[in-house]
Length: 210
Ligand code: MLT
Image (spheres, helix red, strand yellow):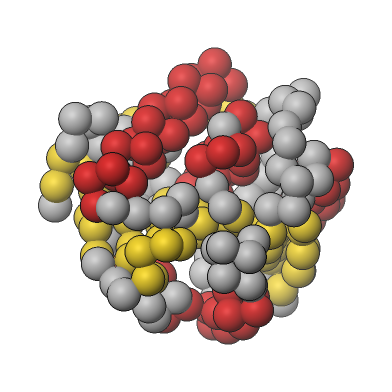
């Protein structure tokens, strides 16, 4: 566990591929350790960067505040998206990394979507597992050609598929190359998420061609 000047407790796992590291963003109640095994499975060569969300909701770490389940404190989300972008910049300098691709689950997927919208230069793309629309009014962003994989659960009790479709449309309208797949799953991670993310990441061109 390491804490840096940007205040994020995090784990860094080196890998031979430092040109396109994977940034792992956990769900509510998770931490920096949760997604490291998943990251290693879907990107065996990549350096892995995993911060812990700085908000505590009754002791459960999150990346931003919410007013109720699925109702976000958008001012806090904006501020913390900036903090996460600063963490990425500091980590790139510290560990000698290229711009990361984010892999986020649930609350982590939601701040990854916010990063794409507010600070598009921070990420080369994203795997968003069970995300939802982060802002009532989507900020204008230029995501020209950025690859984004959205994995939704057909039986997800927290995120209606229609909401994830809206996010896919918003990101596509900003120029991202979005693939949205609806899996026979609920809100939790499933084996299908692992195999879909692995195959999609393998299909991407290298960062220099992206
Ligand atoms: C959120 O708060 O980001 C979403 O409701 C997903 C969750 O973390 O449960």
